[in-house]
Each structure stands twice: as C-alpha cells, then as structure tokens.
Length: 209
Image (cartoon, rainbow, N blue to C red; front, side, top):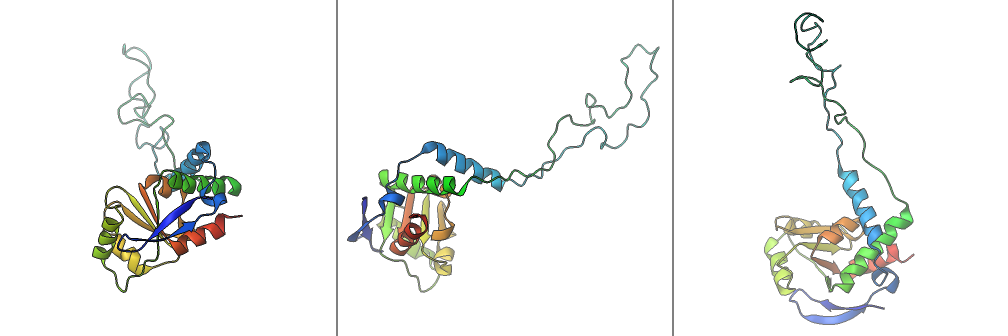
C-alpha cells in the first residue's frame, strides 16, 4: 500500500497518508493511457472544417472552349479540381469526431495515471486549502513552499472552490480542478499533481470499486 507525506501551506510535513493500493498502486498500463488520451483529444475537436467540392464552387457553368480544334486539352468547366479556384477533391467536411470507450477502460486508465504520479514522486498531498478570498499571491507562495513553482501543476480540490479557482487561473501552467472532474489527459500533462487530503479521499471513493 503506497504511503505519501502530507504537507501544510508552509511546505512543512505534518503527517502521512496511506493511499488505496487499488487506485494509487495499480499497474500502469500505457496502452490504456494512450487510448483514453486519444479519445479525450478527439472529443475536443469541433469538426467544423469544410471545403467545397466542384458542385459547390460558384461559376463554371459554361464550357471554357469548344471540344475540338483548339489544340488545348478538353475541359468542361473551370471549376474542375485541376483548375485554380476549382473544387477540392476529398476535402474535409463537417463531422463528429466523438467516440466513447467502455467505462471499465476509462476507470482503469485513471488508476494507471494516478499510480504513475505516485511512482514518479509527482503527487503531493495538502493538509487543506482554504482561502478567505481570491488571492493569486497565496497560491504562488504555496507552490514555492512545495517546490512546485516550476513546470505544469494540476491543483485538485474535493469540491468546487471559487476562491481557489480565481486565485490559480492567472498563474501560467497552473490548472485547478475538482476531484470528480479530473481526467487522464490533465494528469499526464502536469509535472506536479497537488491534491488536498479530502480530494484524495473523494477520488478513492469513486475509483475504489
């Protein structure tokens, strides 16, 4: 069963926490991480790219010149794909890129992502995080105290906290999230995963079964 240290806002060790072996000590399956990451990226695509075929391009109703006798190649319309300004062959059309993987696969990938952070010592657990008002400077100081000021940081709280969200949104490379909204892509993209103790408990409750 993996064990991690718990830190306060000043970066001082105040205790330790035993993590669920099923959630944070699982085998890291890279193929699942790839599959779920690809699904998340595809689902973000808008799919609005569009080109016009030869039937949609304006003009070209008249034959540019007669069929024979000119010495030039035969053409029926100036909107042919081989003409400048003509239609596009096999160009993109609006489409839906969304697809979904089985729930078991998505949950297994999440456990793999969390376990990889534990194995790489990139998970830091906070005793708590309470801000009386939005204050970016407090989050900056917190990251410095935890040696997380460099690189990308994902800060996870147990529930929605507007003060934390507003305090962290102006800091480059810092992203805040709620425990029930984190995904594999965000976890893999961060260099440091900061979670409150309550957030760890919330994640274990969701993914322990």
